[in-house]
Image 1 (spheres, rainbow, N blue to C red):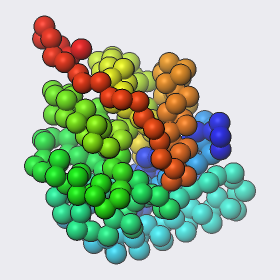
Image 2 (cartoon, helix red, strand yellow):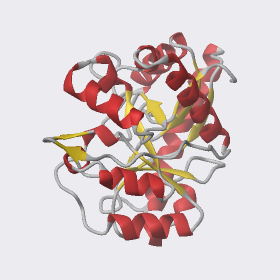
Image 3 (cartoon, rainbow, N blue to C red):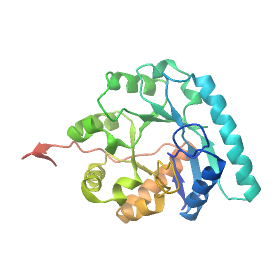
Image 4 (cartoon, rainbow, N blue to C red):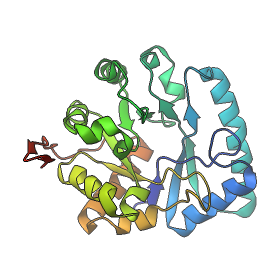
Length: 251
């Protein structure tokens, strides 16, 4: 896996969230991941504390994973895989059994914020999660308007020990989002690139294309970071730079 791609954020498990609707779609997504050079995947179905208990979620996730594992074995596909979750933010998260939501065998946990508004208590909640020994990975940070409006928020979270993940699609489409992502990267505020794939056509696996849109040194480092996260090893990110607002723009 030393030079391979690892996808740490995807919705491939069948029938559990808004990703793959059935096993056939799951396998189509997995074949595309492998075609792109992926050797490892963390399956991260959505978890919403307000909608389902951790126990029920774990039960559904295990059943979906069994289907995929059996199909992967039957086809003889060379894939390393483990379970995780994309955990929707709630101030109640520190009170849950986070071990069942973190990437299996690691202390990394993928957390998603709402994309419509800045929720209350982020700093305190992330602190409480870190105090339990977990490292929050903030999912697709380019999608939060409150971060775009004030990237010093992301700077503070990264400075405090969180990691930030971006979606490959934002780079591939170029335009404003890609320019913004390159700024975040320049400020050392991004550590991981994932696909967040949901559908073979509408939201496909695209890690290879995403990495091809990064400077070679940045791509190489992010690939190494993903492998280390998958293995449960620590990463040593560079010192983040504080974004400054000058003449009507962030620099």
